View 1 (cartoon, one colour):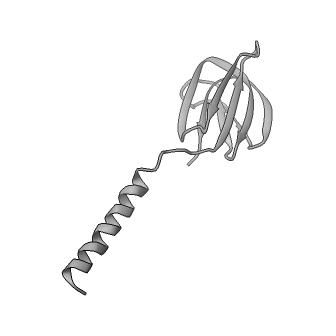
View 2 (tube, one colour; view 1 turned 30 degrees about the horizontal axis):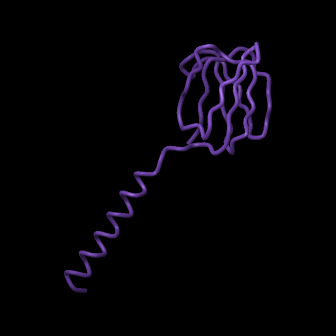
Length: 102
């Protein structure tokens, strides 16, 4: 194999790795709706992986994403938790944070 051909193959492989790393960290596709006791809502479109908090708190979760969402009773995704499966609309008690896997 010529040096030029090897260089092209190496460049293509590196470009493939860079594009794989540059993919946005979307963890769940769809909408996550969090409602407080007064029916105020927070809507999260395509929630990202990891922990997020809602300072006002929420009591009901509508999970219209393709991933299970875990909700917690504190702001740092610790403490008592409830898993809300995709396609569910669930009363979860007062919660202040949620996490998305992957």
